[in-house]
Length: 403
Image 1 (cartoon, rainbow, N blue to C red):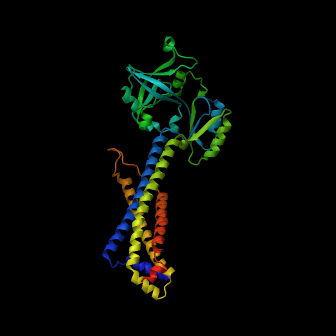
Image 2: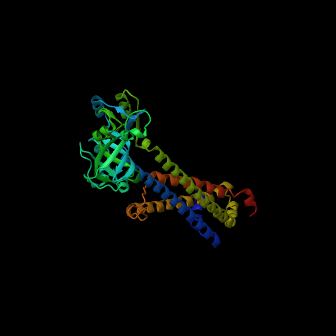
């Protein structure tokens, strides 16, 4: 063990007798360093992108959302509300009525999604922090907070009591709507835009918020009928226990989803893209290791006289192989470490200074995660050790006998 490792350390920092081999070896190590750094940066960039998307959805999506498993409404009594409030792990909850609506303002129309929320909603959601003009709808008033996309499409003037936003929904009932009763087919109400929020394009383009009583009257819901219950958990909450307790509160069948389940398509897409890019970058790393194997084999051939000397001095074939294997493994350990360090430095620079921007004011989101560093370093070590083993296996009894 000592002899192969000693020889490996000597060869690690010594130059080959052929200048071309030295250049090829340097190029192969640099390519490994760059490929490792790129893999760190790519994984960190996707971690940042995932965090950014989660931060956008967390503005409107609660920790838990209770909705009916069938139909559109849940019946909730004051006794059930008290039971929900007493469940350990629930910090706050809000009753919500939500529905697709038809918006009309000053001759322009648009399809939107209205959420009627109670007075506890802002204790569950932080949507009010995205208001850049006006104020959140007051209790008992026909006011709505609208997304910037709706405001832009309809050219809505804020706090314009002389020209109200008309909100329409199909009237409950069955049968086909005919031209003669088209005017009676919709429930209508009017409201003033009290505030404008900007919480992300997907929300801004169709969402508006109002008081739950305003939306309940528009939809002709009784006071005990709601669409969903949105829940904020305490930091130390046990989600599985909270779910079990909620299921016991409602005799009717309900569905309970957390933030990840509410955005399962987004999460699956991000995870799939992350995995695909990891494999692509790993493939680039494997290609870089091919040149590393080639440079090692050329170095072995260049040192054939040394190998012959070791053999004559009594070194076994296994020890000679180990010497070059350890040399290659040490090169991978050091090169991979430098690549990980370089990639981490670039990630930290982007985090602190935002060198690369998506827009003029939004730096590309990036997040340093220690797990990503472990994954990258483990990948380079596994592949590098295999490459070193492959190169050292070039030394055979045949190779020794030809010296």
